[in-house]
Length: 175
Image 1 (tube, rainbow, N blue to C red):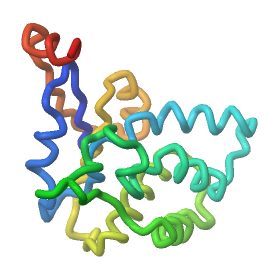
Image 2 (cartoon, one colour):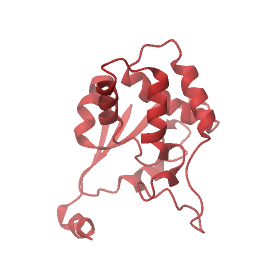
Image 3 (tube, one colour):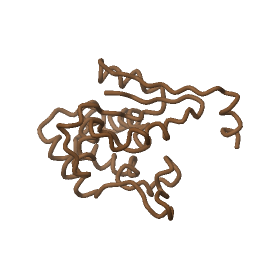
Image 4 (cartoon, one colour):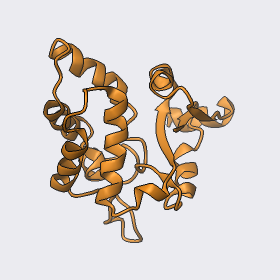
């Protein structure tokens, strides 16, 4: 597991795009999963700790719908207007994604680490990727405060942190 985090508009999306389609890296484009850890905590709390996989899948497809179709959250990662005409997007078939996810999780204890892995694997399967040839899972976490939970789930975690000089990032942040 390799996590990509940013501070000060550090150029993580463009960096990630350089790794896109690498034959040994499994990743979901952009950072539509950056709030997965906070959402997971909320989901567990809402059901008093009795979260089922079906409920997690349903909540995920709503809260993180841009994984399935990047147009669902316009502007989130800039993946809603791709291509030379700006009419292309990133995504996978939702029903196929749900089937892959449910099949992988069937009979397995409900844990956030398992869910994070299964989401990436289901995405890769929908894309037709050979998961066995992708030993690196690259997670664009984006937001550093969730690193603690991610490190708990993946003790061998590697981190790529992209800081940016505040003098160059402040004008674009304000704009």
